Every structure is written in structure tokens, then in C-alpha cells.
Image (tube, rainbow, N blue to C red; front, side, top):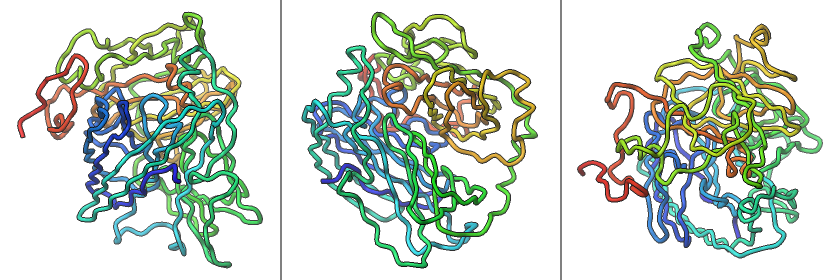
Length: 453
């Protein structure tokens, strides 16, 4: 009985066609963690951009993994389906003529690790059929894992926080373990993703040193570790040996003047007697219509731009469908501020960013003097340590409606997220693809036509 879905293997700039059949008795969506969906937030697979796949129906995602390499993963994004599994690895390889800065390994393994809850069970069937097409290849896999999992969603809906997890699964296996066969003296590549809901993990191989070679699609400086922290939603690539890579790319982010500073503070307010989580005092609530769909059809009353501020308000928490406006081709400084006693993990859909600074205490303008403006790597998920801050430089180079969220799934579910609308006044395929012909419409957009076949 497997908890995860099929592995997706592709090459930079491939068109990947994924048909998802929903065999559940409730709506379903899949999102693609770290895949940038260039000009195409229509394929992002979160409720702010897509109508859910109804029970018994299917939807075909068409993803172009444009200008990306590396290790990523997909997972169910609605409700608390992620607690039952349904996630899988994504590997984007370089084109054959593009060298990578380390010797080829003897083998390549994907490790999907995450926390697991088991007590007070209800029974749910997470039954999916994913039909994967990459270029001319085709792979069909039918998974029917009848997973027992706690009704975590009901706990959160009742206003309580989640209990401590019961354990850790690696590729769907617990105490009985998951086995890789290796030969002494050979080097192996491990693509490790934290697909859990609430827990950072520390990864090590007893008696071995590990070389970090890639972080979420970027070849890193190759430092050696005996163990490595992997926070929620993050992916690291490790090998046993390898040379130091050349400096990364030609994008000199430290020489670009940022056009806007956005400070985002997480908090844990109690609203209407129930535990919620918030960003700049706003606890996100889903609208009755996906935001991208409402924006496309110009349906008023679904959301308001500017419904979340650019900096912490210091006020009490409140409920709102929060959407922040941003200009296409802007360059933002985003500072995540964490005054709580737990590690936070943040993800930005549709974009990469450069981590330029981390420190304890309160961020201020003078904190910029400590920024790394030379050799930071780009990624899409970052941790913020307790009572600390993390600063990013983000090129806003991808038009669309993009989710910025906590990777702690209870916090995300209870409001620690919002959407960033990156807008271009030019109606051109150069900036954004049109709505897909097969787009599902729902809510106030039910019955609306997408575009001619």
C-alpha cells in the first residue's frame, strides 16, 4: 500500500501533460510545489486560481517546465487531503548538452519524508489516477490506498490546534523502513523533500558525510554536512562527493534596485473563539469563486485589491479574502517577520527569490547592511527561525494570481496565506497565456465560457 503518487521525470522546457481523475466523493486539486508556471497561473492547482475537480471527473494540467531544473514535488492542495498522501516527486533534468557541476552519480533516489498522524481515525479513500505524458512518453499509474487518517480537518474547524504528530514516514513507510540498494564506494544522489504538514526534519546517514549539490532547482556551493535540516516544503539534493561548482548564473540580483518593500508578520490570533493564523493581522478565508477566475471574468465582490497591507498593522486578527496588488516587472524586497516561538516555513508560488538575510530580533532598515548581495541562491521556500526575520529579493516577473502561504498546513488552512496579483496592463500572450479551453468554472463563474476550441 503506497501513500505517494507516480514520479514525474522530465527535461527542461518539456511540456508535461497530467490528467487527474478524481475518484473521491469530494472536490480535489493538485498543486506543483516549486514549478513556476511561467505566464500560466491557470495551471497552479490551488483554490485561488483553479476551480476544484468535481467527484468522478477529470482535469488535464498542461505544465511547461520552462527554464527550470532540479527536484520538486506535487501534492493535494484542498482541505486536508495532504494528510492522506497523494504526493509525488518531480525531477527536471538538464538538457544533455548542459553540464552539471558534479560527476554523474551511480544512481538517483527520491525521498519524500514527512510527519504522520494516526490517532482517532476516520476512514477515507484517496484514490487517484494520474496519467502522465512527457513529450512522447506515456505512463499510467492507478493508486488506491485506503488510508486511515485522523480527522484533522474537523479538529481545526472546531477551533483547536493539531496534536503532536505520531511519527515520520519516508516514501510512505514508517517503522518497517524504506530500503535503497547501494554499493560500497559509489556515489548516490538523494533528492529529499519534506512533504509533511507541521514538522521540520533533520536528515543524516549514519557513518557518512553528505555533499549538498542543489536546493530547489539551483546548484549550490558544495559544502559537506553530517546532517541537514529540511524544513516544511523544502527540497535538498545530497551526494557523497563532488567538486565545487562555478558561481551561479549571470543574474546580479544585488545590483538591482528594489521598487517596493513588503514586510509580512505571522501571528496566531483567536477569532470568534477559534484558533486562526494570520499574515499582517489578516486571516485568509476562501471566496466562493477562485480569485483568478473572478478576475478574468471581471466578477465584482469576490475580492478587493489592497485587502492586506504591505507591513504589520499591530492590530487584532480579522477574517478577509486577502489579495495584494503588484506590478509586473517590479523587484520586491520581502521580509518575513516571526515573533512566535516556532520555526515558520514560507512558499511563494510562480516565482523564485534570493535569500539575502536572516537574523534574530526585529528587522529594520539598518538590517540591510548585513545582506548577502553577492552569491545567494534562488529558491521558492524559506524558513524563518523563532523570534527572527528572513529577507528576500523577489523579481516579480510572472503575471498571474499567486499564492503566498505557510507550508505548515494547519496554519495555511486556518488563514496564514494570501494571494499576490502580479498585473500587466498589456493583454498579450507574451506576458500571460489565455484561460485554458478546458478550465473548470464554478461559483459565480458557473456556466461562463472559457474560449473557443
